[in-house]
Image (cartoon, rainbow, N blue to C red; front, top):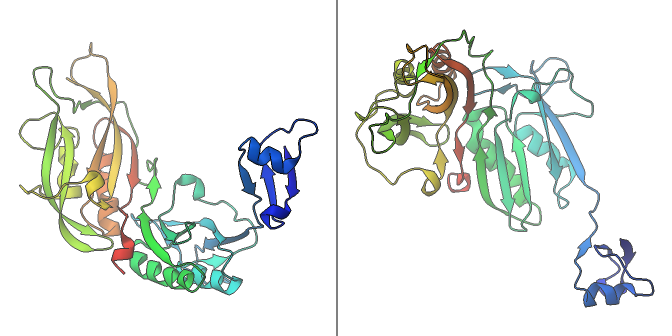
Length: 325
């Protein structure tokens, strides 16, 4: 591996990913062997920030990071400052997301619990930058403010995506204490031709666009278009009533993915059959309300269900935030 400065490349340092034969000159090797010439990384300015647990206490100037279910976390983040922006721009970005710049480590950080919600900014230059932000209700305000700072540089923002927070284990927060119970499997009975699904619309409140009739699709063992037996007693508290509805569908055709809990169950086709081997299954439960209290109550209702042994959560995501500001 050889590193040098080539006058044919304007004197820019580069790396040739090629082992040179003795006596081979560098420029000839790079072109004759068609090896890749890469510019060396320039020094990066990394901005570290935190969301203070007690805003306004001491030097803290930011806001607390509050999860979708209302829990305040002691968390930090960082981003690489684009080279066309200065430190005053970094301060503006950190202020916009509700945080404060730090230069020391944070003790007992909650970052290990999961992934924070974040906005991802795609610039015309092809570069990206992502930042977390303190409150889910501020997604559009933060997106507009950070976009304004980035647009003042040499490359405008062309796309903004929201990636909702993700916590794979919320057992303590949701008070889940598995005691060896078993739920009914949501798999279709052997007599069924195919797997059954509950489909329809729920009255959903988006964090960024407000109330809407949101289409859902949920796996179930029943052919009667009702929730799976393992979640049915908590389903109404989380999603409300499912209405007959049509629409453009979800998945890749829809830029928004609704918030939901992801629950793992121990199941049997017949929980009363001691001879039947148990199995594990996962199922998603949509959460219609954007209220922190309602999201928390939904999670705790699920956690109390027989057979539930692990509960996680994924917040609302949206791939076209730039169209909403």
